[in-house]
Length: 350
Image 1 (tube, one colour):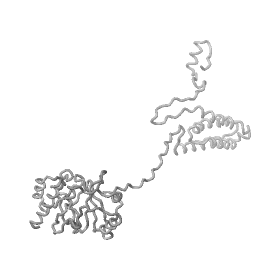
Image 2 (cartoon, rainbow, N blue to C red):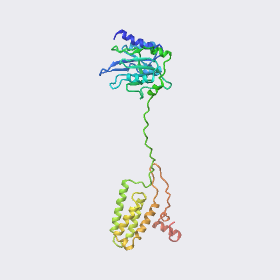
Image 3 (cartoon, rainbow, N blue to C red):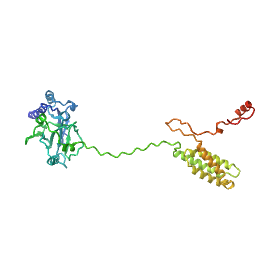
Image 4 (tube, helix red, strand yellow):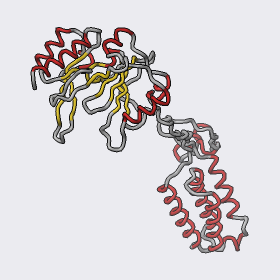
């Protein structure tokens, strides 16, 4: 790299700094594929960028092969970047068509080292960030707050430069910056504003279902079904005068508790017990309304005496049912003797 190339990059940076545009050093080099890449030469370039000539000269001594770039947020600049890197799109042609249809003021413009364009504007009152998804055509991007752009007049190591376009009274960037740079026109601002993604329909929240006191799973239902089958088989095998009616009532009592917890359906229990009673001859001997009627009443009454189940995490809940008086106390032989000795006779349950 010649001394004139070194001097061109430093001169371009100092020209920006003279009007208050902050810059920082930028490495420009080829990658393994031969493509030119840019990388900041210092850490924290967004905060370290400056218009101090002494710091810029020191950076130039530290990084003699670096070019300089403008920190766009501090500078308050917005840049339309038209490139020709894509094989399927020419950003310069696409932007030229937009300008011909809508018009554009004479603002600073640079022909880039890749033969594209940089068009400079002042940021609007509501700054535009970088990078953003826009409505601009392919090959055209916007660079604003959070981004950077190579200083006009800089040169790459291979001699290609970012050349200011000054024909037809078009101002240079330092001149326009110090004398009032135009803001991006409204039609173009609409295209470069961030396009928000279309809102996706959100699934409606389902109301939380409180677990019922009888909620049951597969395990409980399987247990109740097996218990029902076993009881029915036992009843169906009972001979005459073997306590068939009592067996039906006992089965109804046990299965009624499972009905109350919704492990098995009441109609299923009644139908199965009726069938078992018919097979053992109970229905034929005593009628359809004898044993089954009492067992049905027992099933229904049992549901009224099942305490409410405790739901995990909600603590214990006080049962609201009434306990039959006869259940409150069942005298034993020990306390029966005590009652008789103290009162002179047997006592009825309290």
